[in-house]
Length: 119
Image 1 (cartoon, one colour):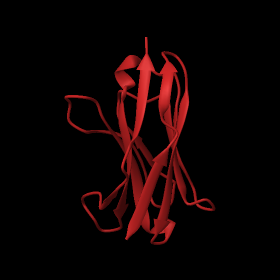
Image 2: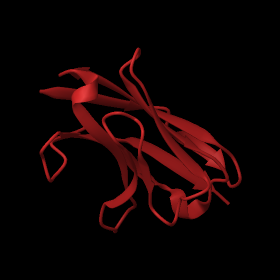
Image 3: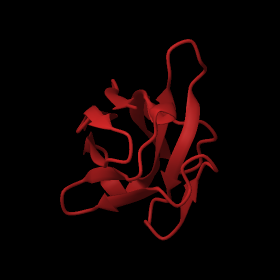
Image 4: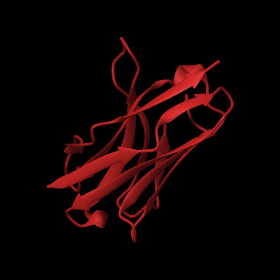
């Protein structure tokens, strides 16, 4: 089992920055890759960014490439999403997820944290 708890969401003006955190517990932190997803009102959940179990490889959605940075801290067993140059279109509930090695789908999900970007 992996427990995931997000924090760091809030209200920010367009052009501002936020850093989301996802504290993980349970299985060994290096045994799974992780990702961030978001869901805006009335829309499907969409992929934002992912990072490999080793931290050596990252992936980004085109909509956030160059503005968001995903990282993970093994000592703190925490996943981060640094979000810069935020836009109103980034408004959504952001959730972190963990995918065990060998899994096709993400196995564990956090509850999510709200990010609201005002224009």
